[in-house]
Length: 590
Image (cartoon, rainbow, N blue to C red; front, top):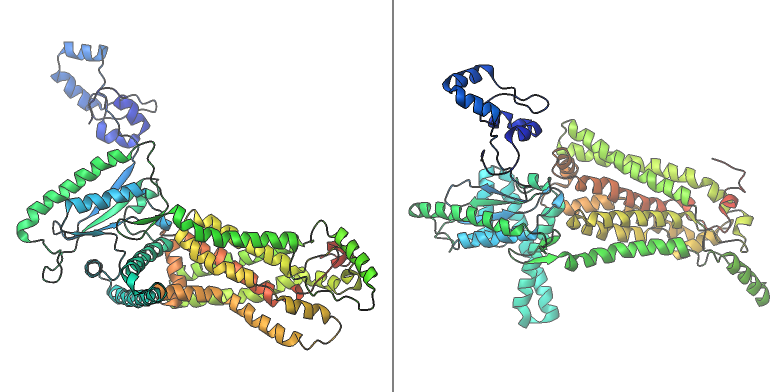
């Protein structure tokens, strides 16, 4: 309202918000303009016309005692609801979409209010979040929405997802019955249904693509959801099909009731001490997992990797069997040497942190370059398959370059390792290069997944589940380390097969990102060759940021670092001297 009791004058408000100028005019309802100080300068022609119509007494009293018209302004926007009614009042189903950009979610109270009030307004309709692929009513509603969108390929993808969900659910129920017995078949079926809904909801959040126009509000910290009303059901096929031409008027009233109750319910949500949350995963239309329940697996995976990196930094790794005791030494001499070595190793193993950090930073720069090449291919209007080929070729092209960087960083260290002085047992233990590089790469991957947990948990969990085993299994085995160190200057027949096994394992680490993308493409029933195109498209269209950054700045660098740690022979030899000794006594410089 333009008038009210209290509040600031219109001129002061208009001076603060210039876009209100044309609508409100001046404080007396006149149209005109304001100067920089907020003072009304008016329109001369209109002022003259109005002055003639007024009496001199009224004009003087108005000029002497102005009564500025005041009005209230609305407070900060707290909640928003986006309505989509493609079929008018023909409402048999209501789909509520809470997923925003990058998996951002509104306050759970807002979603619960929308679900419960929609069920109350339309007790005979189907209200839900479209989480169950095997529900016939939800499938019919999905097909109706697909028909309106005109995407012919979406029907085939939805059918494939339904077939996969049915097969996996049947397999899970069979395995559960084998372990827990057939008497608990009903509970097992309910658990599998909840798991199926949780995975579908997590998949939509992990993609980071908004599911409605409400995502624009969440960008400005305003909780919002989208309600899609429509998709009439056939009463001959479904029990909930009750909409007819005679009930359209009643449905319009129900829509108005829903609007009013949501607005009134939102007033109750604006409180200072409400106890709802923003981190949750829906397992059904009214059931969910809170952060206290789903954070445990992610914490266990990431924290275990961090603890492993700390153990490598403080205790070292791969030193068993690295030195062979002289059989001619007496037990007394051996004890004296061991005591001296123990005294010198009180401070723990020594690491070449500079080279390891440089190598891991090089892999991250390489991942950024691969992502940049993918975006250039996308901006060049290439086909999805061509964008995928360009991205894969760039990633494989950078591998020899990173191998050259690793060889350059550790060539002098390797020269110092094979020296007699570096291999002497009475010097402080210096860890081989692969231990330090593995420590840094594992810590970087674990830290990235932990940080991603607070922004997009559904994306962080599968990322950590794939990267942590790759990082932990990287590097040579203890048997190969001993064979390599014993074979310095000799020919050990055991080295040849072990090294070939190591190379094969390193290639598995290198192609792990391609395997990861292929599996996700299969889950989404999409072409794996067009995955790079889809990821670049989400970034260019500002639909998702974390998916692109996670793939090229977390997954690819971690897998490539694991490949280098396992593949490069120059990083596998063991040393025992200080940094300066391992690099030629400090005389050689890069």
